[in-house]
Length: 254
Image (tube, rainbow, N blue to C red; front, side, top):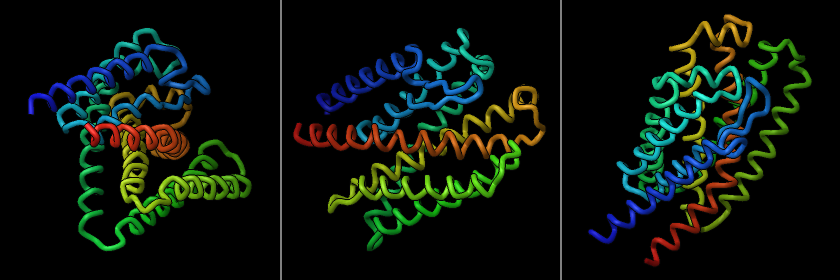
C-alpha cells in the first residue's frame, strides 16, 4: 500500500510539472490561433492522470491546472486572458472538469462491464454526439458570422467523416480499453470547453459581448464549444490515447 502511494505521489508530481511547463511555455499548452481563439491541450495530462491515479490525485491535477492558468493570466497574450485573472473563471471550471472526467471514466467503465456490446453503444453515442454537434455548430457559426451555411455544412460533414474514421482507427481492437480511453478523452474535453465558456458567460457577460460584438451569448458559447471543443477533443485522443495505453502496460507490469 505504501509503495503504491509513493508511486501515485510521484506520478502526480510529474504530471503537475508537465502541466505547469505546458501552461507557461508559449504556444505549448495554449496554442493561440487568433487573439480571440486558442486551442487548449494542457488538459491532456489531467485526463491521463484520471486513468492512472486515484480520484483525489486526479482532481488535484485539475486544481494545479486552474492555478497555473490563473497565474498565467497576469501576463496576458490576448484580450480573453485578462478574464482568467478571476479564479472563478480560471480555477473553478478546471476543478469541476477533473471531477467530471473522473466520473465520466468511471461511468463508461461501469457501462462497459454490464452490457453486452457496450463498446458498440459507446462508439455510437460518441459518433451521434459528434455528428449533431458539428452540424448544428456549423449552423451556429453561420448565424454568428453571416457566412453561407450551404458551404459550411459540407465542410462540417466532411470533418465528421474524418473524425469518425480516425476514431474508428484508434478503437479498432479486441482490447475494449481502447474504446474506453478515447471515449473518455472526447467527452471530458467537450465538458472542459463547455465549463470554461459557461464560466465566462456567467461571470463576465459584458466582456464577452464587447469582445465578440454580439448579445447572443448562447451563440458565442455554442459556436466556440463546437469548433474549439472538437479540435481539442481530437488532439486529446490522438496525443493522450497512446500515452495512457503505454503507461497502463508499464504500471500493470510493476
